[in-house]
Length: 112
Length: 115
Image (cartoon, rainbow over all chains, first blue to last red; front, side):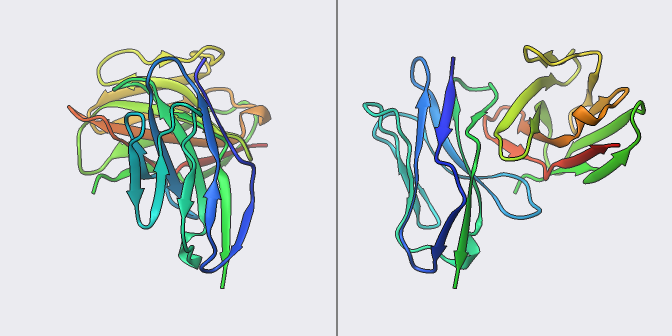
């Protein structure tokens, strides 16, 4: 079946450090891939997405590239800020109108 | 932007009682809403898909008689946990999809604690 595996947290970084959160997936066909972010006390928000192989999603300095050959969608940011502290979820959707399948989430904590 | 609210945000109840959680799309009409359950340090697990005006579709292993879902209008879906037990304690999250669109918008979640 379809599934998402992302690196265990928590990830603790200093401000301006480089961030990578690994995400790999198992799916039949060509799913769409997503990263969601959940700030404390808030609902999940879409951070970025990619709908086909080699697409790069980007938003707020975060990037992720849909790699079909490695079934990966790793999240990266060149210089994190304290305000980036949140829980990040990798997810896939097999087709339009269906529910998302989530990874376990990775907690990021950035200190100044 | 699209906003989804959940009420209550936190509820504590006694074992054997029923609890209703509301999910509302505040500024758009949602033909489809999803209900998820999240255990500590685990991913969101889809419980059911709720379409306005029709019966919800439950995922395998989710008891439909225990988790009653009603999507009576285009802006409201409710999840009722019937005869709650301590093992039902969890974080319940809903999401809504606007009519004719594909992106899901999530509510902030409801923390249920059953004593």
